Image 1 (cartoon, one colour):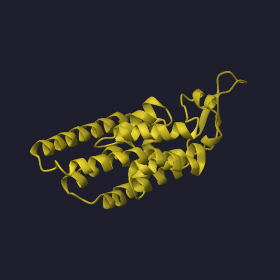
Image 2 (cartoon, rainbow, N blue to C red):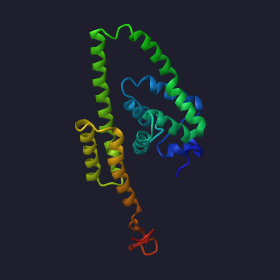
Image 3 (cartoon, rainbow, N blue to C red):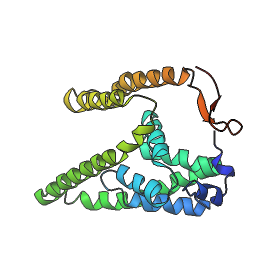
Image 4 (cartoon, rainbow, N blue to C red):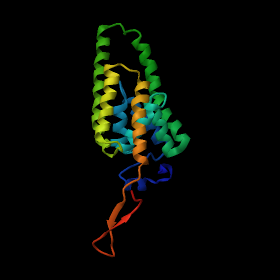
Length: 222
C-alpha cells in the first residue's frame, strides 16, 4: 500500500498528482470546500479534491467515497478524516474535520436564527424547493462524470451497471432503507469482487531481448 505521508510533492507530480503541503493548507481547503456545499457537497468535493487540487485520482475518489458511505456518519466527514490521515496522520484527520465544520457551523447557527422568523413565507419555501432541485442535478452530474472511472473496476461492466440499476430501483422505487441496500447490493458486489481478485492472474508477457522475437512469460502462471 502506498504511504502517501512519506511521499514528496515532486514524487506525486510524476504521477500527475499533488498533496496538501501543510496542515493549514488542509484546513483552509476543507473550509473553502464546505462553504460551497449548499444542498449537496458531493459535486464540490469531487471538483475541489480531484479536478482542482489533484489530491485524489478519480479512481481513488470513487473507492474512498464508497467507504465513506458505508461507514456511520456523514459521508464528507468520513472522507475528510481519511484524507487528512492519509497525509498527516491523526493530526491531519482532525485538521480536515475542523476545517470542514468550524465556519459552516457558525453560518448555520446565524441562518437558523434568521430563518426561524421567515420560514412560513411562501417565497422562502419556494426558494428552498428550487435549491433542492439544483442540488439533485449537481449530484447526478457528478455521478455521470465519475462513470469512466468504473473501467478499472474488477467487476464486469454488465455487473456494475446492473448493481447501479438495482440500487436506483431499491431506493427511488421501492423506498428501501439505505442500510439494507448497502448490505444487500454492496455485500453482493464486494463478495463478487473478492472472488475475482482471488483468482490466479494470467501470465504477463514481455519481449525477450536475447531472442529478439519470441516473448518471454513472467509472473504467475494461470
